[in-house]
Length: 108
Picture (tube, rainbow, N blue to C red):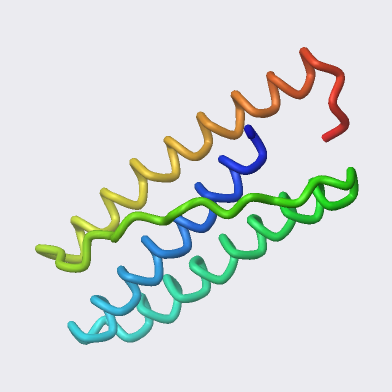
């Protein structure tokens, strides 16, 4: 369950960054849009690592529903602030996952 949650969180991150990329592109921030599109793709790669991990143990990953993401922003600064807060939360979650794995002797 904890790895399925990680997959879901990475997919959510991807959608957040993809939505930001679309807003940035539409608002004229073309280079930032490309950067956020790159971020969105990287998050899907992270989800793929977790899927492969489960599959290597004979467990079929369970893909959870991804909620709709915010699609309008006030400014580039708002996007940067949301990004920072989101990355801090993801880092916290990954630290908890690593702690869980270590306590339960799960290979990482």
